[in-house]
Length: 318
Image (cartoon, rainbow, N blue to C red; front, side, top):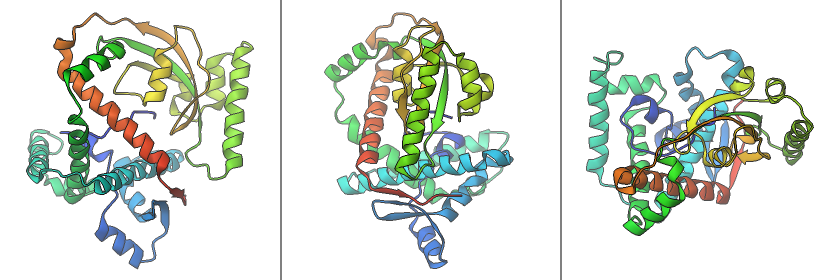
């Protein structure tokens, strides 16, 4: 899974629950008191293994062979969310609590309309995903805080420049791509990163020599798409894939293969297999969409910078 991580105020259970906030002082205090093992340390703050295990509820029925990948994904999300919380606290970003409560109430109303969740208290639904209403509020505060922080920068000149530089994101253009992923998320030693780096470059050399992309993906990729030869299907320029990946894919012509691309998931080699052209569109017709995309990009850039600057020690969730 290489979906882009974007912090947004969502109105559906899945979106909110797939980005849980790990900073729960009561839980952490309890975990520490019980001698719980630490999964990661982020700028001096601990994330405990029990917190990761609790959030595994959202993966009910997962194949046991995918359990470690699920734990890694949860820990990744928790680290990112903690870094965001730390940034908001450091910057003193204030959030209107009425907006937070409105978002919570809207979500509660949506659960009543959903046949699968109708009649269930929001607390019970969230608990089934290993989270709580208070955790949900913290997630929303993070989202609203960052949106407000970057929303203050928006004006017509900024939007025009951004729109002109990113037209493919608003015309409906899509590419179909396959990839080979060498996952580095669970690596702890520099020599292991060096081995992964060497492997992805040797795979690229094989492709340059005429090797079959699908066969190499099936044999070497750490992504679930490997069974399909690395095929990821069609996706747009923004909002689905993480930015380094999407940027590289859209820079390719049909049939072209990228140089190795690094993301927070590891090293990728990307091949574009088809492209659906979009239709011309004027800025005024998509202005709100452009504004939202601009803010999301700014948030993503901030997260990447904060993650790079953060002191993160991964203990592991094996």
